[in-house]
Structure formats: C-alpha cells, structure tokens
Image (cartoon, rainbow, N blue to C red):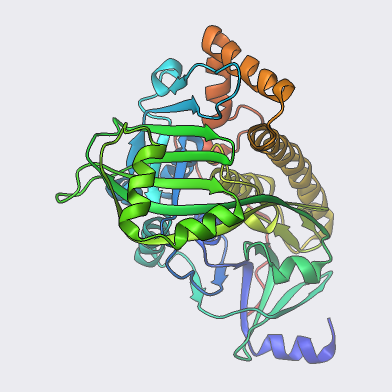
Length: 427
C-alpha cells in the first residue's frame, strides 16, 4: 500500500470484513459474517424498487435464513411453494406430458417460499438494524487499493474504509471484481424477461406453474394473498426483444387478456399490480471466484436466465460456502487465507458450472425449434414422470443440493461459535 493510501486509511474506518453491495446477497453476507463474531461493514447503495421482481427461496436458502435469524420476518410476507408444475406449450410434434414436482415426495412441507425482492431486502435490513449486527455505510465505492496486507475502499464521498478482506456482492458491473483483476466471460440470449405481480380469480394452490413456450418459460409463482386480492402470483415471462416492446406498448387491459390466454384460463381473469419490470437475458462466468483479498458472491460471479429459480438460491449458497471456508482462518495471514480461498474457488466453480450448464441447455432447448432437440427434452420429462427415484433426485438437487452443502444450510442446531485466530487492527 502506498504511503498516501496508508495514511488516509488510518484516518478512516477499519473493519475485518467489508461487504461491498447492499442488495439482498450483500445484506445476507454481512449478517452471516457478523453472526460468526467478525467486525463487518456493509457499504453500497440500497437498490431501488424493482417492479414485479420476486425471489423463490428453496429449502436450503430457507434453512440459511433460519440460521441468520431472519426467517420469521421473511415468512410474514412470503408464500409457500408446495409444488412446481411444468407444462409443455411449445406446440411440438410430439407433446410432452405435464410434469409436477411435489415437496411431499421428499418429505418436506414445501419446496420453499416466494417473496418480493423489495420485501426480502426490507426484512433482512430490519433484522440487521434490530441487532446492530454491523455498520452500514450508504455510499458508492468507485475505487479500491489491494495489497498483501489488506484492502482500502475509497468511497465516492471521500471517506475510506480499511479492511482485512472484501466480499464483493456489488453485482454484474462489480468495481471490486474489475480492480482485483478477475476476468469475465459474458453472453446474451435473444430474449427479454417481463416481470409483474398479478391478482387472479382462481387459486394457485401454492403451486408454481411453468408454461414452456418457444420464446422461453411463462412462469407464475404463488404470492401471499391480501384481503382485497386473495389469489396472487408473480410472473416471469421470457420473449423476444420485439415481442417485449410490442407488449409493453399495449394498453394494460389488453395485456391482461393476453396473460389469461397464455395461462390457458387456469387462473381466470388477471389484473396487473403496479409496474412492469424488464431485463435482457444473458449469462456470465468468471475466471476466479476468489483472488488475493477478495471473494465474489452473487451476480458478481454468475448470471443466467431466471429458469428454475436458481439465481438468489445460488447466491446465498456462495455466501454460506464462503463463511464455511473462512471459519477459523486468520484473515490477516496469507498462509491461512490462500488455501481457504482456493477451496472456495473449487466449490463454487463446480456448483455454479453445473447450474449454469443446466439452465443454458434447458433455455436453448426451448428456443431452438428442431425435432431432435424436442425429442431429447421430451424424453427427459417422460423419464422424470415415469421414474419416481429419478424425479425425487431431481427435486432434492434443485431445492436441497447434496454436494458440499454449507453448514448454515444444513438445518442443524446452532453450535458454539467457532474460535477464530484473527487479528483486530488497532483503532
């Protein structure tokens, strides 16, 4: 570290772990590391409201939130998901039968819960503020200085934060990732996702319904009802860029009629609540998930289409895995830190790579209208429909992955806080 930066850091904040990024992943990371006894600072701008955006949190994520003490708050505003029903709506030559994956098949009351992204952030923040678990700095971080002894975050307002370690949860355009020298590989799909919240006449029965179309999935996920709207769902609808522009230009009532048709009348009349969100479909992978004094979590290190609701579930698994790998590690000692981060990188490369490949194959199999591709996808669905052990294995892997499941996601009773050999720099 240069003398100028070292002097500036002495005049600024000091922390053991700096979490960069104040979205749901960043707040969860700050809660997880503060829970283990570390001094944590969360820095970043809180995200603006996201129209129509919800997150389906599967069983492993539910257990993680329970370990953080945030689950009661989340459940107050969430709706359980007891099953996922997949319906082929591609019009292919040989139709595929409907496939339903039920939580009861693996002895769970629900596969997970669905909650709006805004309500999840609010619930996590409420828990953090009640406990005064960590310091919150509402400011952008345009620059960093990394060296062998730690990191200095240079805030947009001129302040500085010195940290032993940085957890980068600052999203797809991560500044921490770029300055740390991590390369990215990105790709796009010819699709846009429209997101919205809906009220409808008929009940959803706590079942998430996916209509697989040639433009991608049309997915209705159950939401908690209200007194004036007892039956509600969130919608993620993938389509071409041109179709998205055309539909966004429609009068609201006309679009609602189209939604009813797309759902084949299963939910009766539909009404759109609030605004409509949109985002372009793409993917991203990184060259390293941890390097030097930085580890990447969430969309800082992986992006893919919202198929199978893997996004935030995978992000929370990043956080839980990193917390596991850094347990009992002296963050100031490179000899201890380096092997821990190498372990984290191996774990995330395997887990993220597997999920990215699966989502990519399923998405492309829908938008490529070739008979051999249709036959392969149909054969997979038929096999899961006919073979109970295969179907149950798929359900378990989707909601409670068995491969290196982090301790905070295992649902075990809390154990005594693990001792950590760590050095707290003098304030």
